[in-house]
Image 1 (cartoon, rainbow, N blue to C red):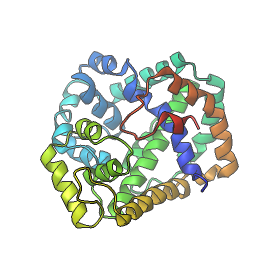
Image 2 (tube, rainbow, N blue to C red):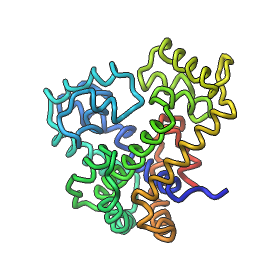
Image 3 (cartoon, rainbow, N blue to C red):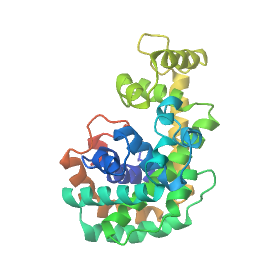
Image 4 (cartoon, rainbow, N blue to C red):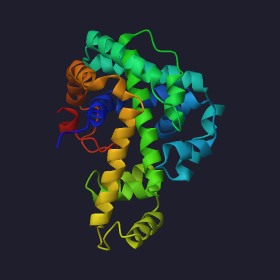
Length: 289
C-alpha cells in the first residue's frame, strides 16, 4: 500500500523542525533568556506563538504531557522572558543548526516558495498551534523561513491528530499507550519524557483493556479492535492534514517538495542530532526514505 503523501511530507518536515528540541544549542539558548533548563525552554519555545499563556491551554494543546510537568514551566517562564524573545531565540538556534549540518539554502528557498502558500491557505479551524505559528512573520533567511514553515505545518498536522484522538475518545495519555503497544517507541522513554507516574500509566492501560483495545498481558499489546482504532486515527490524521491544507500542493507538488528537501533531511539525520529512539516515533530509516 502506498504511503499517504501527507505522511511522507510529515516524515520530511518533522526532522527539520525537530532540531528545536534536540540540537545542542537549544538548552543554552533558553538559559540565556533566563529559563530554567531544557523543559522550561521546551514549553516556552513551543508555546510562545500563543502568547504568555498559563499551563492549562498548553496542557490541552500539547495533549500528551502530565499537567504537573507543564505547570512547572508555565507561567513561570513568562516572569523570566517574553514570548517574542522565545520566538526569536528558537528561530535563531534552529536556523543556525540547520546551516551547521549542511542543509541546502537554495533548496530550502525553493521548498519554502512551494510551502508558503500552503501554510497561508490551510484551514485553521480547531488548530490553535498552527494558527498561532501561521500568524508569525516569516524570517528573511531562507533556511529560517523553511524551518518556520516546517514548524507551522507540523503543528497543523499535530492539531488535526489531537482532533482525531478526541473523535475516537482517546486521551493524550491513552494515545501514548496505544503507540507503545504498536511498537512505535519504548514504554520507559515516553513515560519519562511526558512525566506520567506509574500509577496513572497503569490506570490508563486498564481503561484501554476494559474497552477491548489492549490485551491484559504484562506488556500490553493491541487487540484487533485496538489496532483498527489506531489505524483509523492515523488515517484520519493523514487525510485531514491533506484536505485541510497540503492538497493545495497536489501530489506532483508534494513530490517536488520531497525531492528538494531530501538532501537536507539526510544531512539532519546524518548529523546524529535526532536520537534514533525519540518521542516523535519517527525512525531515521523512515525519515530518510
